[in-house]
Length: 536
Image 1 (cartoon, one colour):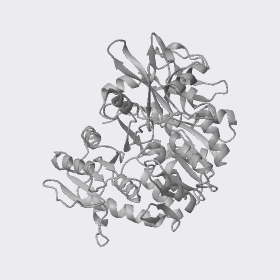
Image 2: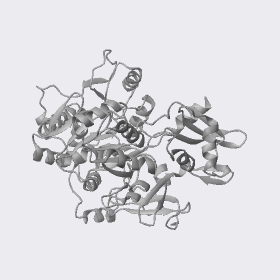
Image 3: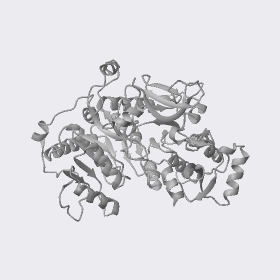
Image 4: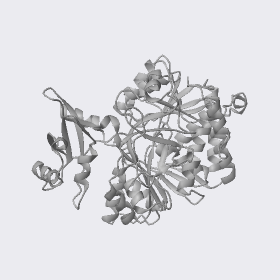
């Protein structure tokens, strides 16, 4: 299932003083025992203390085991930001099963692909009387591999073939004897599966082990200075690595704090959570960070309790980064990370210039990072190349995907990230975009950000996205999508570009004004939707 970890890599991990040899569930239950009656998790309908969380995890673990879910069984979870997500996640891990984390925004095509690729035997999800949910349920009922379906709300129409269960057991049900017979996992075994963030084709399956993810969380928790006083808003989907464990909700739970589970699609709800619960920490994508700043400027909220905002997931313009610090009066931590492992972040003591112009440095001193040319030769400091990495918590292979493993990993174990970056003179890493997003115009290669940044400068911020679209005459052409503003038209956009003396090959062939930029489930600009929009 998973490319075996070499004996030398296991030895290097074991020699790390802060490398834990325990499972994620045991690690969490230790924290639950320590923090007892303190609030652990809250969503729009539920509040659970650490003691209650531990009891619910144990009850659900026995419930899942009683229905035939056993060690190493893959189970796809597709839940919104709710307490039930963490109960289900840890209950599966408790019995040695392997959660596969799909995103709430995934459609039937994406969910079916994940289930098929991971060979999941069960599905845990949200149900509502909506077309998307019904399509997923219909597909699940026809699937030959899904044996059990667990839903937070039972459908009105019964399924014809597959058993459907409530997500949580009834209070009177007890499965302690069954739970005693369950097999436990080893710390270096796969704990759960994340999905790659790609927007083309099927997501790749990213196996995270118990030990490597605990290390991941604890490294980032230290850089965020988490303790029992932290009150964290999970604004992004908790099935995504950023909000899950960087340090995310799991980092908060490990340190005795409280996590409030919100909905990134409802900015007013997020603001209310921040104000009513004195939120101290949160993680946002740039578009959400912009909304927080605008809310402060419009006096919608004061955000006086905020101590730190992490921003990652997409490019964050320096002037926008500085506005977070100036307007919200809190610490900004820029984060560059990947579900496959490597995390870079700005840290206390970094200068303002480093914080707003870079993504900091690796989270762990054991991380190895190189910036290389297309032939995998190191480029000079300050030059742009492709970032490759390896380290104690970076994976060394995808699941069930030999083709990707051959393409994305070198023979000596370096992960080829596909991200363009440069190492600054001060040692910080500055991410320049994705290698595959580079545009090649008349033999000249450049990043879309070279054009988009021009429109972000100055008092009037113009949000845009440059994409390359197929063209029969010249192979491809560039189209700049610009968010509409009053008194803004194509001629004014072109004038702004010409003011900055951009070379001809960087100037867009066409400019399209649209109401808003489409976003992926985690808040990044969805370039593939823009291409589809143009083609239509």
